[in-house]
Length: 372
Image (tube, rainbow, N blue to C red; front, side, top):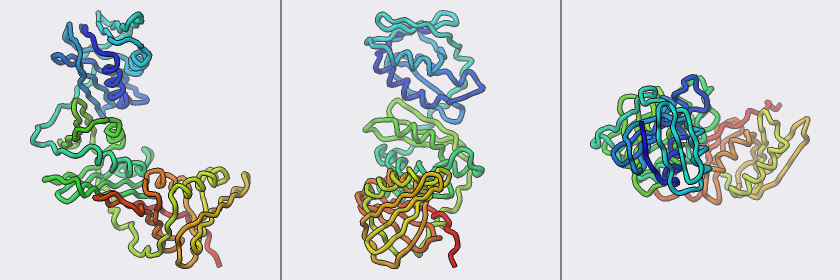
């Protein structure tokens, strides 16, 4: 049995924090629940899909200590629509009453025994303190390039994390593109190498705090803790592919172009581009780039963009969506395309990089038909 009173806004924030860990579909009914468990004068909220677990502690006025598992999405919907100040939660048998002002709901509930066991904190001495804002920046600039869940190589479905005494390096690739960042201001006494699930890292992005994030690894599990919220995730089995080998060293020709101009043009070209390949042709000439998209059914589109380029003309094709993803995750006004020929991967960097940051992206071109 549980009986407690909790501030509405505090409860809503807590539920939003953990609900992201709920699986979209599951054959195990218990995984669709959020666990509410009292701990002294705090309420522990938890959700898991067995691979990723999120736990947060919020203050509450506890009348009766205990634990109960409630349908997670339904609970969040109810609390989101409340307009009062305090929410009362009380359990009797297999039913839980949730009341706020003049609104009252009753939900079916499950016992604590029916809910999966939760991971526990590691030793404080095993935790590495990292600046949350810089970690979040590194995730944002790389996680978009992680391969989808259908990728045969499991290692590509995660983000490679390498932390040592020199820097924090994050790498993501799906075989068509690659994003790599080094944060020179983030260092650790001990070395950590892991392939991390993007779900756990995306959950970390949602945490707003000026406090550092404490990271630790235990066997096949990694954990992040910020204030009263902890994220636990199962690490993906490696090894991670030798990504340094695919970064070309011969791309000496540099095209400088306005990031927003290019993004806007690519978006317009996408209206016509083949929906299966999203192919857009780049014709790079003296101080100009001509974008061209063609589709037998939809028509043809062309746009000229001013640029800085003084090397030999080059024609190269890309999946326009991949280039837009890169532009979307850069912040510099001007971006640099490091080119070699129409068949070599292109390196894209920012003209103005933040101090202490070494960031590059790579994208494979679309193979063009051989010309005689």
